[in-house]
Length: 208
Image 1 (cartoon, helix red, strand yellow):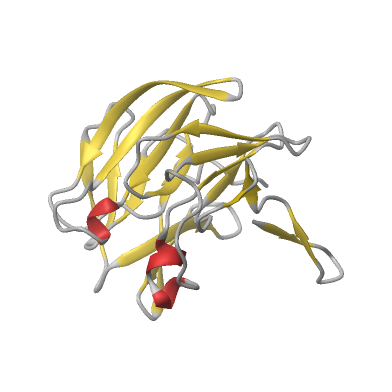
Image 2 (image 1 turned 90 degrees about the vertical axis):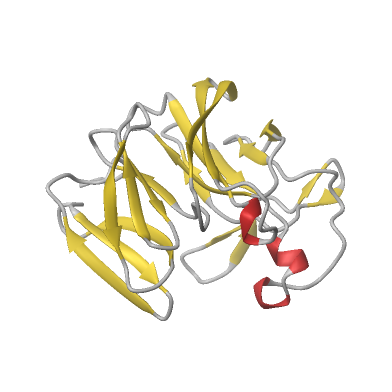
């Protein structure tokens, strides 16, 4: 995981844990305290089009937290392939998608929710499970709804896990993000194109 500096140079923030190379960091969120939370599946090791093939050095596929001082810690494990992640608006809940079904037809296609306790995660629970495809990128809006990029478009759930609907896309939606001048436009990565739709609510992480 690297940070691009104003002059274009790259600073490595994390590439190893306990002396072993990370798998292939995938998605991240930055908390208000400056800590970076990120997922580390093996897609970049096992899929040639995603990276460079190699044997994983780590024994698992984890969610990591990089604190502002540079300390790296595992905060969640037990995933087939941890992928997208997003905080609730108050940063008391972290949602993480498990996309094991992308490589294994019988694999996981679910979103888990954790209570955030400082730099730790507790109270793991199943938030949602998909009948097909996998939940890839995740985002929340200012009212706490969760949006997931899926094979049919952006699926939306209420904070209690109640399904609210689907913003359909012509092909698989790989990721999504809130943007626009007021944070109320949802952008959807749809294969070789990007679609957008105006919403009545802004993204939770949007800053004026």
